[in-house]
Amino acid sequence: MAQGYIRTDELPQLIPVFPLDAAVLLPRGRLPLNIFEPRYLNMIDDVMAGDRIIGMVQTTGGDRAHPPLARVGCAGRVTSFAETQDGRYLITLSGVCRFTLGQELSAPTPYRQVRADYEAFASDLQPPEEIAFEREPLMQSLKAYLQRRGMDIEWDAARDAPADALITSLCMALPFEVAEKQALVEARTLSDRMAALSALLQIDEAGRRDEDDDRSPRPLQ
Image (cartoon, rainbow, N blue to C red; front, side, top):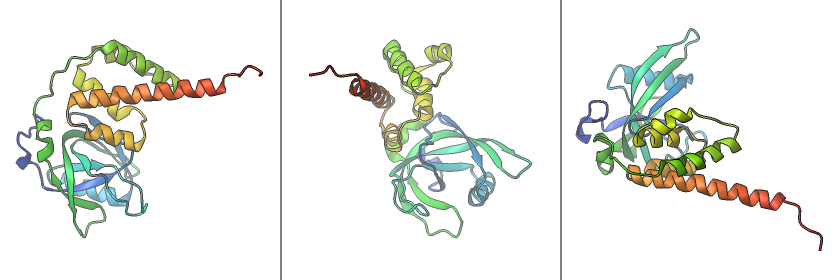
């Protein structure tokens, strides 16, 4: 059960959205955000006075002032809130349920609002599925990916984490491209997301090997 919600009809059908490329939210994930733009400060004020639900969604390029939104986002509930002395809001969004974007409203608010259809992702409100996967190959691919970028994680925690928590945190935290992040958001099940994550790590590794081969000295003919 996600954040106390049992059925999709308990979720608000009209929600504000926060378009932010490469910063995705997934069910049961936690996303810290630093809010400083006036329109989004306004949005937080409004949602804190209501149901605290915000839709995180990526864009698909186009007009930077009003870019088209990706077809699937994830609704999150503000579960942590603090205000800084300089007027910023530091919040944490906890992922509740993904949604398909419906009609965008012509709202008088400075932030964007959409109709959210959760039905295709109703299973997000259920306990996470239990999946069996070979953890060590994933850890090896992940280690190579992070080493190539000068990054590191708490390896003991990663090895001990439940599958859902591990896959969710990696999909949200790793610096994949926007389209790759969107593919992870849209993966239907946890098993599908695990397969997509593994594929992205393997593709990156293969690409790096090809680059290394291209840089290798060639024998003189």
